[in-house]
Image (cartoon, rainbow, N blue to C red):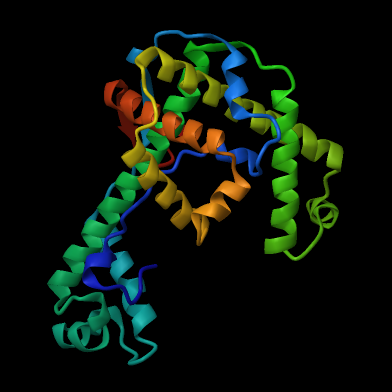
Length: 274
C-alpha cells in the first residue's frame, strides 16, 4: 500500500527486468560467451500470439484502495473513509502531495492503472518467452553449461538462506520437508527452462542483429543495481560476469522487439486458471 509518497512519486515508475540469465545467481566460471555453441532451430517468432491476464480498474477498486490508504494514515487522527474531507487530505495526508479528495481519487486511479499496465507488460514478456519454446527448439545445449548453471543457482540459494533467512541451506530444505535431491531436480528443471529461453532469445538477437548499445546498457546496469540493492557497479560485476550481464541486456532488447509484433489478447485476472 502506498503511504507518505510525494505526488510525483505516488505513481509507481515500474522497471521491467527480465531475469532469464540472472536466475543463475552467481558468477560462472564458464564464460557465458560459450552459449553460442548451442544448436537452435528457430520457428516463426515474428508472428507470435499470446493470451495475457490484465486487471481492470473500477470505481469499486478505487474506493477500496482509498479506504485502505485512509486507514493507514488515520492512526494519527482516526477517521473512517466516510468521514474523509478535503481538509483531512490536505492536513494529514499532505506528504502525498494531494490537497483534496478528488485529487487523491484521481491519483489512486492513475496508480492502479499504472500497476495493471506494469503487471500486464511483465505477463506479456513471460508469455512471449514461454511461447518461444513452443515455436523454437534448442536441439543441443552447450556441453556442461546446464550443470554449471544449476550449481550456480544452488550456491545462490545457499547464500540467500544464510543472508535472508538466517539458516543454512540444509535447515531451510528441512523446513520445506524436501530432500536435497528433490530440490536439485526442481532446480534443474527451472534452470533448464530459463536457459533454453535465453538461448533462443540470443539466437533471435543474432538473426535480427540486436547487440549492446553503450547508453542503453549503462541505463540497464543502473536499473539492475537499484532493483537488486547494489550500491556500487563493482559489486554487481563481482556477482555476475560482464558476458552474462550483456547477454541479459540483449535478451531484454529482443523481448521489447518481439512485444511490438506479438498479437496479445488480454483477459481478466484469473481467467487463465478457469
